[in-house]
Image 1 (cartoon, rainbow, N blue to C red):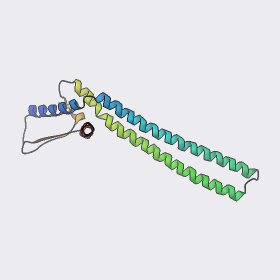
Image 2 (tube, one colour):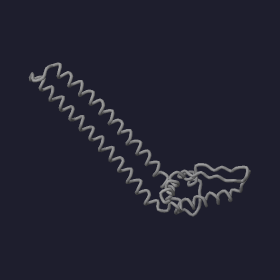
Image 3 (cartoon, rainbow, N blue to C red):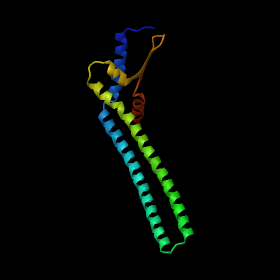
Image 4 (cartoon, helix red, strand yellow):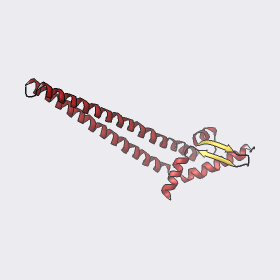
Length: 168
């Protein structure tokens, strides 16, 4: 199956134009995404800081127990038990910190991908012609079927679908 290049360009341009027109308030959407990302990252940072404070508190309690051991207020066995208990708690808290740091990285990647497709759309809105660079940023794939059917998959199709669901 063949198609004239002009016809293909017109079809792709029209689809992009229609879809991007529907996303014309990209700046508002970017601000919403940016705000959501900052909120999620701040939540992770707060959680990490709280866990670090708990570790500091456990370390303080352990040093206090050591002083009590040195002064003879606590037996060696009791001090050893407190030390083991504290070490286990610190290890669990460090694991939780690692989990939160991983969540933070995931949020950053997730929102980064969401924001990534908005920038080419900004550029496209002000461009009168479709060029290869825009096509690479906005179009994932183009399929031409034997029955002359054309399928164009956009890089931002998921975000567009979500946007349409919100408006419905």
